Amino acid sequence: MKKLLFGNKSIFLGWWVVFGSFLSNAMYSVTGLVAIGLFIEPMSSSLGWSVASISLGIALRQIAGTIIGPIIGPRVDKTEPRNLFFLSTIITGFSTIVLGFITNVWIFYMLYGVIGAIAITGISNLVTGTVISKWFVKSRGRALGFSDLGSSVGVIILIPVINIIITSHSWEMAWVFLGVLHLIIMTPVSFLMKRQPEDYGLLPDNEANVENGLNNSDINSNKEVWTAKEAIKTYQFWIIILAFGLSNISVMAILSHQINHIVHKGFSSTQAALIISLWAIFAGFARVLFGFILEKISVRYLSFIVMIGSALGTYFLLIGNSLELLYCFAIIYGIFRGAIVLMSIIIWADYYGRTHLGAIRGLTTPFNIISLSTGPVLAGYFYDELGSYDMIFSVFIMLYIISGILILFTNAPKKK
Image 1: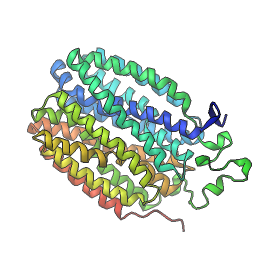
Image 2: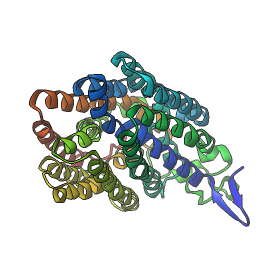
Image 3: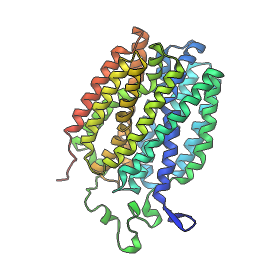
Image 4: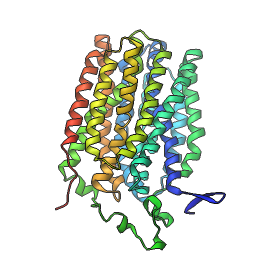
């Protein structure tokens, strides 16, 4: 089956992969990233856990990905992702449900920090971003942009809903709701995931098929193909890891602690949830917009712009003592931070090609996880010690700026 038919019209299979990835990103952004910020305060108050101890669970969730990332990456290059998606969905859904019944912090670490982390990696952008990059070359930017739009839609819709459940009922019920919803949405999505167009007699972008005389080399004639072993020998590989690693420290810390920071400033959790939904709206528009722009402008220039913009947005969060300043944070941070994940996916495909993309991105996972896990722990520690996030958020601003400068001066590698 090369296309799915609706009446007399047909839709390229690649766009169904994008749609599935859209839904996957929607659930991943909430279940795997943003939602935990709503649970920090109520779980801390109810169970007597410190913010730092909950942050350690967030860090463990990132660290656990080092176990599975390098294994999943090469598998995406070689096998259909649907089985991986299905297994990840079942484990993630049920482990999330059980979080609503825990009272022991070590069980939290095991369920949220380890089991849930290993499982949810199977629906992360390591998989969806790699698969989409195989289905699209010329339209890769817009395809990834539409896919990543799901991250914003998930936050816009679900964060206010989860907050209502927590405030009206309990944080325990909110975990159960999130786990059940994950199972309902992600189970059918598993069957939309396809490895690459060549498996279905197609080529990327659906511009021509094999029967029309084009082959894979025609599509990639202007792109150098790098193996994972070749990629790690280039200095660009390590600079990219360092640059996005520094930004990841800021990204994950702010995602995890922004709600608690806003509440600490004197605003209600409902106001905080609405602010997060607002930045998610702007992030959604930005992801699609930058997706189109990436097809015209070098990814390193745009990466510099989004890093500096993210630093500016974080500054408004830091000084956000009024709703007006927090609105500035939501708009600016949403626009620029929303595009960082898109840049981090595109740059690997643009610099090293799509043939071994899964294996190459799999090698980067341990480094990404280390950086992603560092931020939440640092933020939680400084909050417990100093009573605010001001000092550590200032550090995050500097990390964004350094990241942008590093990427700006890193050209694509060339084979000798």
